[in-house]
Amino acid sequence: MIRLLIPKEYDTWIEIAREVEPPFGPMINSKEFQDSIKNCIKRNSAYGIDNENGKIVGIVALDRGNNEILWLAVKKKYRGNHYGDKLVKQAIDELENNGDIFVQTFANGVLEGENVRILYTKHGFIDFKNAGKNPAGIETVIMIKRKR
Image 1 (cartoon, rainbow, N blue to C red):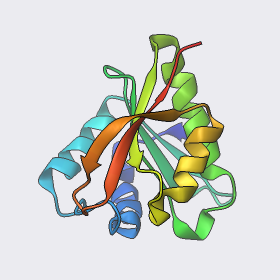
Image 2: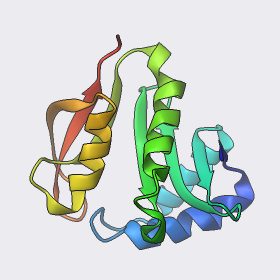
Image 3: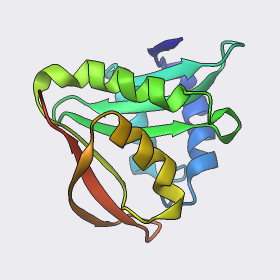
Image 4: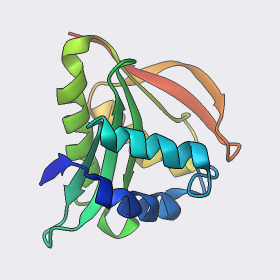
């Protein structure tokens, strides 16, 4: 089940961020990141997906003002179960009426980003422009899904 996150699930988000932090750069100890995720929850802009036991195993966060997917991660143990696919679909459903949708992700050829690039491409995203290196020093791009 996909549902909006509530404030008491902040620690779950931190737990997932800790797991995926290496290819993204420092997050969990960043006050800016902590404040950002609290604000996403407060603005009803963060969705979690529950596993069969009702525990959140993946999160997608949106910026409705910029029509952008801000953050997407699924716990390693639960990858390959279509949780990321369902979260991206939720994000698209939330944003598609507002125009083109953007996401910053790993550049083509970055091994750590192959699966997420496949996921975004499956949903109609294409590379739009170079976005430079992320805080971990890995090349990124902005992908776009054009409004139909």
